Image (cartoon, rainbow, N blue to C red; front, side):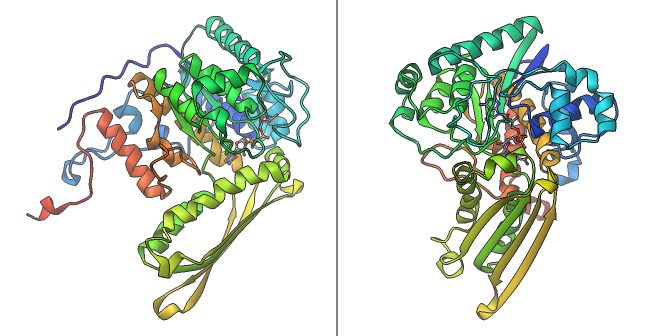
Length: 438
Ligand SMILES: NC(=O)c1ccc[n+]([C@@H]2O[C@H](COP(=O)([O-])OP(=O)(O)OC[C@H]3O[C@@H](n4cnc5c(N)ncnc54)[C@H](O)[C@@H]3O)[C@@H](O)[C@H]2O)c1
């Protein structure tokens, strides 16, 4: 051990998990945690539950589980609460989502039925394809934020909660650009009071969370906390924030493959990605304004990974297209196709085809669990503001404006594990390895 350890408060007491949106991802996450607690399944895909971290030299053979290395909350400490624009409890919502088998859901039915969503903050302009009825009715966004604060404080008291984390697992909101109202906390607060239409519902939730010092993660591509006003609030209150847009299926594959092609200096002339998806998320994304938010998020990764300005001969002219097609029969079982046109030695063309038959929420649920536990860890370690080390989980990682995001999955993983080493005062691993041979 060579560095100084960071003070991390103990993970004592209950950790409240505040979920915005009780749809496919949220219910698959909650039902999964309850099933795992009962020994009915394993937390496959979760770094906090199954991952390890190498410490010191390879010859030392110190490879603890992450859960034994940093003090994380246990699954038994998690207590769930949610908001949704529909009244269905978590059991009814998970049946509706159709991700997990009814036979499994029956075994955690009691726990799921106990989670009844609180009334949501929602404006039909935010998500055009949804028409919710379970809504708060306060007149201004400021009053709505105060109502959310009351919900949170009530939950905290009723369930005897020690700490909390909030995660946006709600639908993708329509595309908005960062504007003047998002530039400072003062402007944002004035906008909440004057009901400025550039403040979507997700920002009202985020304001309530950060105001109360509750860490916030954004699983969708909406701007939400990724504007200067929220960075300012997060720093002021020393609250960890991260986002945007869970990196699960097609984009996960893209950020694994593209760095490999670049490492071998293979050129790219085009990457065509298309999907069919039949769940409510697919229905929402069928609206062009919500799709635009998603499209921006999905398109940005190649540009950043391939660095056309640094490698103009290889990457300055590639054509990148992403489509999502709503196709109800497939429900949550998304199928994606990628056609990659690449070129090698002397410019000779080649093709690569990828066909991923995935399950959207099965891939997303372990990410929600990790984000809950890591954000809580970051808060107890006194790490406020943007948590770039959690980029690993996102398609559009949040960074300071002067930095470009790291999209390469292996760089993101290295950053995450080095952050854990840093927290525990362990040496950073550079993979230089020359010392073994000297
Ligand atoms: N692999 C994945 O599943 C994946 C990957 C990346 C991002 N996402 C994003 O995660 C989010 C959740 O995905 P999902 O499959 O669970 O979608 P879903 O449609 O099943 O669930 C979203 C829920 O949010 C609710 N909602 C919408 N606006 C709300 C508001 N203002 N307040 C409270 N509730 C609200 C909806 O009623 C719905 O129940 C989506 O934005 C999706 O794009 C999912």
